[in-house]
Structures are given as C-alpha cells and as structure tokens.
Length: 146
Image (tube, rainbow, N blue to C red; front, side):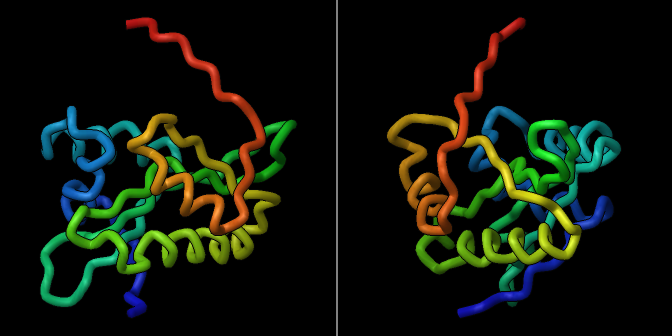
C-alpha cells in the first residue's frame, strides 16, 4: 500500500521522534526534538514522514539536506532513514528511497549520498540501499574526540 509522504515542519518535529529513536535511542524525546529544531534544521536538515491514517506519529521518516562539495557537486544527502519495528516490511522505506530520488532530481542534484553503519544489525538497511542500486563508493573514517 502506498502512503503519502509529508513534510514534517518544526512545529511537528515530535511526530518524527519515535521512528528516529529507533536509530538514536540515546536521546530522550525532548532532547531529540530540541537537537533537530535548534541545531540540525538551522543547518539545512529537513524531515519528511509517512504518517498512516489513524496514527499520531510517523511510521517512517527520512531526514535529509542538500550539500555542495568539489567531489560530489550538489548532492542530496540522506542523514537519517528509520522505520518503526511494527511498520517494517510494508514497503515504507522503499517509498522513502523512491521519494528521495525524485526530490533530488527536482532539486537538480547530481547524486544521492548516505552513510550507513556497519554490523549485522544494519544488514536490512544495506539490502534496501543495494536493491535501489546504491553502491559502496568510499570508506567513511571517524575519530571520537569525546
């Protein structure tokens, strides 16, 4: 079943929090809402979600921004994509990935990029990306400072 994908504005950030807590459980609902609205949105972070009829929060969300670099040109960067456990295997993440491609084209982006953690717990996400013809194009390095 296809569902509408709606913009989740700053007034409605709380609708996205339960799904995002699947990815980022260390945040309380209020910490997450504040971080999104006070730190991420001012830096270009946008949210869209699927809010099925009869529910009071998003079952699947996608956080993204556009970015520019010498290497990537103008790109659509998927920051977060998360689906509540009870809504998995309903095609919602596939809808989000298809939406992101259409939105990236509408925004005249050269490519779509995302980072995904490694480990057995990420295998379903990796299957999603591969099914949509994403390729592993680089290694992402990080160094923890705190």
